[in-house]
Image (cartoon, rainbow, N blue to C red):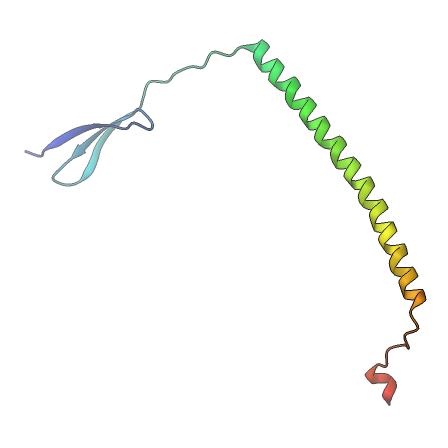
Length: 98
């Protein structure tokens, strides 16, 4: 007769029946379902907090985008001024040497 063992899974709370000689699972008993109690007031407060956080993140992103535009314009004007101040000759391309 095959040796069997009933094993409890601590992760999912299920029970497995294992054939020790063959090393296979013979059956599986699902854990009893536990229903969560929903507190609608608490969930409503969570939703309000999430909405406020998302609004704050959006405002921060808009502020950064506006600041980024200003920084890029400043950097562009600095580079244009630097390019105007230098007396570099135009680059000689290979095609111009013909």
